[in-house]
Each structure stands twice: as C-alpha cells, then as structure tokens.
Length: 476
Ligand code: BGP
Image 1: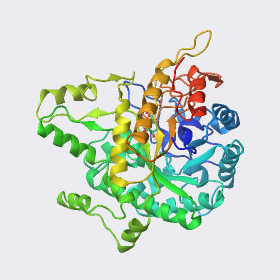
Image 2: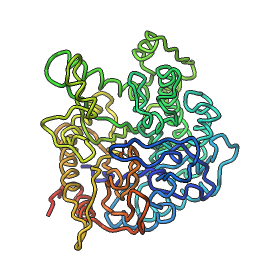
Image 3: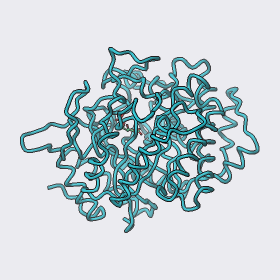
Image 4: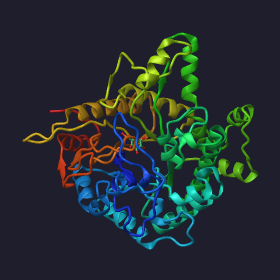
C-alpha cells in the first residue's frame, strides 16, 4: 500500500447525527422513514406520526458526541474519515436564498476536530439527504432546477471549508437508480425521495433522475476545481459483481448485461461524455432526454479525479425461463453455493472486491478509493468484552484482496475505509442491531440505551492493521 494510503471509515449524517430538529436543520427525506427489520421493509410516511419511531431523529447522537467519537477514531490511527453533510442542515428547504450559519458552524467544528487529529475529512455532498421540500415543491431530481439548488449548496460548503477539505464526493450510490429495473420503494426513496410504486412513468422518471444526477456530478466537479485547483473530487458507486448462474452463454450474457447497467453513469462521469449507447437505449423504449450543448461541455470537463467503491457482496443473475428464478424471487436472490452469507443474506465474497477493483481500473484508469466495506452483524456483550471475530475475519479477507489488487494487478488504490466504524443505523432496515462498528453503541432497535461507546475486539485489531499499513492482518 502507498505510504500515504488513507485508512479509516465512512459514516453518513442521517444514520449517525440525530439532532434532526436542532441547529436550524430542515426536514429531509430520511426523517420520514421508520424502522424496519430483516423481514419487514421500512415504512415511508408522508408526515410525522408520533406513534412510529424514526431512527434518523436520534441516530447515535453524533451531533452532540462527535468529539468523543473522533478521539476514538484517532486512537485507532485513522488518517481519513468520510462523512456526509446533510444538505438540510445547510439549506433547510433546499431552495433558500441564504444558508443556515448554524449548520455551517456545526460541520466546520467537526472538520476542525478531524484536522486537529490529523484525520483527512472526505466530504460526501449527498448521501440520501435531500431536503423534503425539494420533493414536494419540485418533484425531486427529475426537475432540472434541483441541479441548480444542489450546486448552490455545493458552492456554499466548498467556499466555506476551502483549504480545510480537499477530498469531496459528489454523490453516494446514485447508480441504484436504474430505469431498467423494478425497484422496491425504499431504494428509489433513499436516492430521490420518491416511492417507486407511486411513479407515474417509472422508466422515464428514473432515466431523467439518473441523467440529472450525473449532470449534477460533473457540474459539481467543475465547480470544485474552479474554487480550488487542489480539490480532489470523486463520486461513490455501490457495485457488486453479478455472476452468471452457470456457463450457459445465455446466462453469461444475462449476467454481463445486468452488471453493465451499473456502469452507464460511471462512463458518463469518467469518460467526458454521456454515453451514446444509453441515449440510444432510452430512445428505443420511447424515453426522451434533453441533452444541451452546455451539458456536453460539462460532461467533457467535469470528469472525476477518483472513483469511490462501496463493496459488500456479490450476487448471481437469475437465469431466464427457469424454476430457479421463481425460487430466487421468493428468497430475495439466488444463493451462491461457494459462499457463506451474512445474517442479512448478503453473500460474503472477498475475491469480489478484487474483481471490481480490476474491472474499474482497467475500464477507467482512475485511482480508486474503497469508500465502504464491512459486515453487518449483531454483537454479543460478554462479561469480558465484545468478541467480534466474524467482523475481523470478514475485513481481513477483504483487505487481503485489496492488497492483491494493488500489488499483483497494479490497481491504483488510494485508500480503504470501512463502513460504519462506529455502530450506526442501517440504511436499508433502520435497525441498530445490524452493526458494522469497531465501536459498540449502546442503543437497541427500539431506540433504547445509554448511547455509551465501547471498544470491541476489532477496535484493537484495526488499530494494528493501520499501524502496519495493512501488513499485519493477523487475528489473535
Ligand atoms: C451502503 C450505503 C450506506 C450503508 C451501507 C450498508 O449502500 O451507502 O449508507 O448503510 O450500504 O447498508 P445497510 O445499512 O443497509 O446495512
């Protein structure tokens, strides 16, 4: 690994901050999503219902405890922390004329605390945090005006923390908006504040949203470079390799095509043009996207400096016309007989991270930052501590594959950040018991607990990994 390799973790505002009505924050989309579970989807409500529990309201109280948490990250030896800024703390309605100074002050204090501890802040500008007013008033990202509001917000924070923040991320996982796929409500909602089942013309709307977000990303890159030529700007994609069910060429092609849908936006933000093949595909199914000359200029000049990769699992493409696809849809995906699964049914596939890193690097030639990776698991508190060997084993195997990608395959990788270095609310289920952290937070799925922080065994292990720059992965 490089000498200045970035080691640390990633968190997102709506999953950890809490303080949802403090500091002048406005309501954002995830403030209307209740707790769900492994079996039950989270409910999205149109107003706040007092009898329901909304995990983003309390988070893990990072809003008040960030100093203590950053001190723990420092103790582990972090050299980077990726955190998101909640747009609704800066512009409570999204379309306000003036920013909310309290929101700017809050994040500046967090950034200063990181810098004082020699931790590089990596700021995600959009991680499922959209002011709800922009959904109600403008119809979310399907409306181009939202791009302007997003850029106003980006400009405000980029100028406010100019020189303090060098690494910026334009979007987290916008690739989950895929016009070709049917979606569950929660996925389109997390990214755009819209329920899939309520979209009048889902293909058209998702294509517009996908296009507008990629356009917003290239414009934000240009803006960041204009504000400070030393800014290093990436965009984060959630990618899982989709393997063919077997070597039947139909299944191999099917897997390729499913995989490929994740890449049109990456092509758009890395290759200097919105891909013609995608516009042709849209046209064929009757979707019209208005592409202006100005858009083309932005795509040309707004390419990324690095690609952020969120990697958790691999999956299998459902074979066509077979009983297996029926079975798979009952259980939410075909199980890979060569792999074990997490308690939440995600296939544990360390080699998959090497696969995607290679694929990305060979296709785009841009540096890669692993921006999320980790195992969601319940933990047990024993008298003498929290012995999370399963978490260490998962991370050990993945870091080993990252090392192979760098040393054997010559992939340029600039950092490795685990997801949720401190336990936080799960995005997909809203549970606390789906824990990723090295630091345990005393809070249960019902929102009860002291919020006290405790070090797990993995805390000491990750510290040793970082201290050895990834060489010592041994688990005692
Ligand atoms: C990624 C998101 C994160 C995070 C992670 C784990 O897709 O960027 O916000 O939550 O997935 O998912 P979950 O919390 O559902 O276990």
